[in-house]
Length: 397
Ligand code: CTP
Image (cartoon, rainbow, N blue to C red; front, top):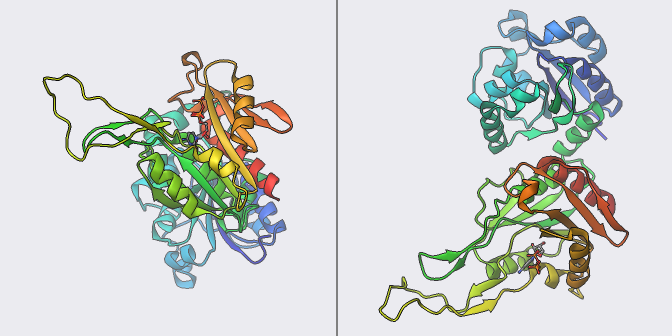
């Protein structure tokens, strides 16, 4: 799977560094050649000897090691790999990467490289949730840095929550995906996301509160598994993920046409909150207040993109996934919606205010398919996306 791939593995200073030893083994089992770099803090957790013994070659540690500079400059070291993996990516390493600092070998390599980078964050849950780390994460994502984890779980520091480094097997899968070798390699998937804006006049529109967060996370997760993703997005409040083809649209009609243009595809994931109605004839001039009172707006129904694509007799994607945001009788309503629209799966969630899901970072979904309803435990929207992407990969296999 990873035959002859060259991986530069940067091991940061966290307790999860011990898992980097197993990671080296697993990467090698897949056929990769691993060149290890150990940060100063990383060397407090694992010894250079154990790292180099496992990797079967010397471990690079210092920026101003003249022998290294003579044999292989740090610039060359950073570029001679097919992929740079940072595991564990500590809060400090992430901050250095996001800030473009270069004050040791690891950060200098990361700044000097033009090679794709995959990071496996690992830190205390408070550090992971700190606004500074959130900012750094957003910057790194926008810079195109791929990420695996962190997972939820109990941590060495005794706390519980997101912050545990992904398991070596998950990191190996993410490495394969980052190298374009994931289970969705060669698959084309259309994803709709975000709200739509339906114009009333040149300055006013009808909209909804969708942020596009879940659709964006799904597009990112599908791309990470190697899919070619056509991301048709309304005006969302989160930036689109790197590594996908972005098709920005405003209205439901534009979204519908963009989806048609993106076909054929192996799967369609319709996560957008499409306005059901548009103003029949939007004014080309700004509507003014008149003595006659409010202007009468006449509405027309928008095309139901999900239903239309689900019911195509020719060129229907093999797997069509819709969403249902419900406030009561979630399973019953979503099951009826699946039958009505003709899609294969419905990802249903309870968005009643008490759940805190709308606008929050977590989601609790029920996956409705021909086999019935499967309730997933409450988890982060990224984790939902990851799991859904894996299910899609399994369904298309
Ligand atoms: N959808 C779509 N095009 C539309 C409306 C909805 O593709 N014009 C898709 C959404 O992207 C989502 C699914 O249909 O995947 C369900 O959307 P929802 O608004 O819950 O469905 P409605 O048909 O509007 O059902 P309801 O009666 O609950 O409003």
